[in-house]
Image 1 (cartoon, rainbow, N blue to C red):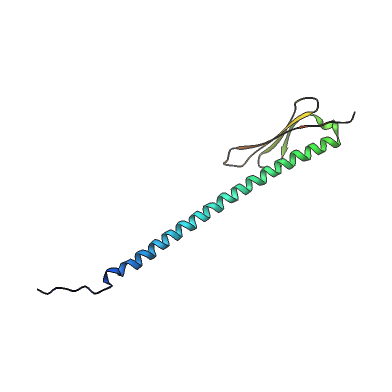
Image 2 (image 1 turned 135 degrees about the vertical axis):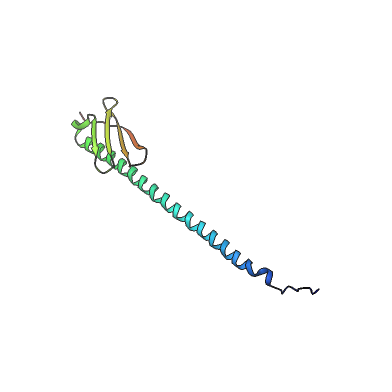
Length: 123
């Protein structure tokens, strides 16, 4: 009986292919992770934009009340610059006011920005 001699290197023919497949798999997971991070970043940027807009609306209303003290009453007002936005002003005392801005992005929970301020007027 003749013994078959194995040629050197025949055992490693599939190793290069296996290494290449593993490298493609790792690369694919990295690309998926980066795209997921980009999606989360875009959502957080939109949330920050809405919070900044709500803060601006409250500051604008406080400025208007300082100019025209007669406008110190409460009430509820729609906010066109926020999705389903609404501003509610509640007098807490003669000079303290609470501002609450609510908005809701479709498919998400309702968001709220709240501020309390004291407005002194010259009498």
